[in-house]
Length: 170
Image 1 (cartoon, one colour):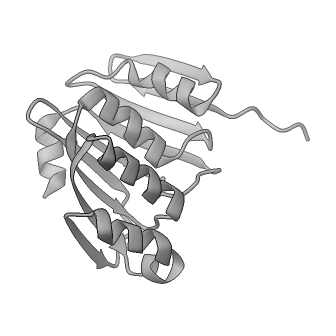
Image 2 (image 1 turned 90 degrees about the vertical axis):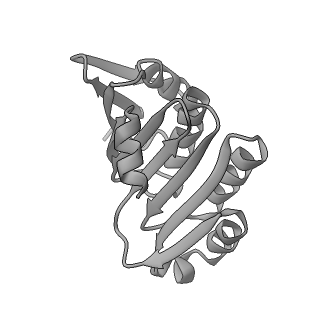
């Protein structure tokens, strides 16, 4: 069989479907440029980008933000990318909720996260939610991707809604 070219598509709440091809950065830029308060974007991706890459693009739109991450898994590469976002002033505070197994499966990522996070908790967690919140705007991402290097088909919904972000932060 012929390998498929990675692609992504998005359904935007204004009934607009965007099909984007190219590098992860190019695809994310094309989809994120539709983002504005009150808009919901649903992503489908064939492994073209990972959650830490989406987080970076959302911070570029939202500006410096308090960030909450809940995930079943985080590996070292995304943890290092998050450190860079903190160092660049894009993440004001970081709160994390990880599954208990992350400690055993990804100890280097956990060690990094423990040094970066304002608060970190471990629980039986399969939720994958990312919240960005600042004085001007809020963004919530709910979907299937973990904070790992991604090569799988994933889907997620991005809600550009401050009330929704405040709800999901708690």
